Image (tube, rainbow, N blue to C red; front, side, top):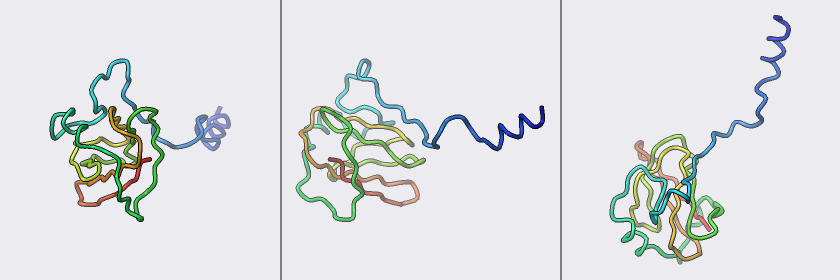
Length: 127
């Protein structure tokens, strides 16, 4: 019995990888133009109307592939809450490992900035 427990412990978990699963908004239940945020700073329809592809992309920004077929999708890769801005427009607060989806925006590159409570800032280009 002890040998079996020791071998199970040494072998590690049966699931490969250490990635924390993300929870994406379910389109069957989410009808808002912006989904997946803890809070919004303004009316979602007004925010979406102000968004468009960015003409200036910072060279130092981290590149992320847009997973959404229609609109914009981004997953917070950090284990902290952060304030989200898209192309300089304040959007709201995104949770750790959460996915935000913005529908009704044109295809193209978007500059997303996460500002954490510590003051640390990460910039991404989603295309």
